[in-house]
Image (cartoon, rainbow, N blue to C red; front, top):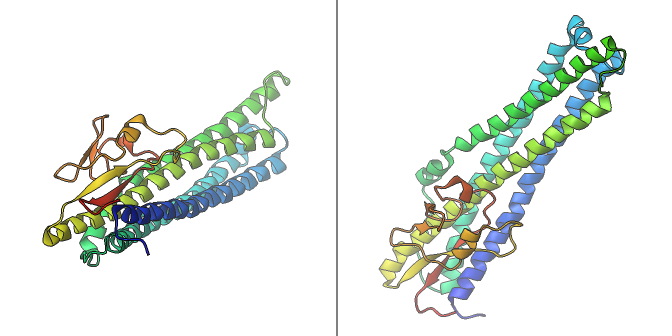
Length: 297
């Protein structure tokens, strides 16, 4: 069995970080499944309009038969259902990331150091405080609102062009069902990319909140055990396709006496994913680790 060491502590923390990435993949699939289901429903509702009114339905036709508002109501309901699933999935995943990270941090430090660090159950107030920061829900709602607007605009533009095509004896270019469906799918893909980013950022924040709670708890025990310890920024080369130079420069940099990291970009925070500069949060794969002075490598 390996001797207690900082390497052993941080190998266990890195293992927990890899598990977090795996858990994000499961949440990502839920979001993509939601988009796939919504797109299928929207395309089916749109296809029915084309089946009833022909290859190039006009704005006059759909309004005369009261099909436009009915179509929009169905699409609005579909996106609302998808949004509800997303919000619940991300909130649950963020909470699990927080609790799992706190637990895995305590395990890594106790086992890796072989010392009697005290890790009590994470207080409910701490959990509620982290999860109470729900500004991300507005970002998700804005994403879905934008998607709905783009889909409605695409459909209305098409029906208007079809009317011009009819009046202009085919000179104006109309759009068939397959062309409109393809444009809507493109809008959904763009929106899904934004939703995945929000999900990752929130799960990473939960993961780092749990890590930070755990390390802070270990710092309290370190005072009791009369040992010196520190929290250190960890950058994973290759984890991101476009790593930030500022984050790479932070690799192995310790936090200050208040537990804050100061990035070259000017951002400050208790851990990666918790920085007060928004551009430092998007798809950040960095982490925080824990080292004890004199424990050895």
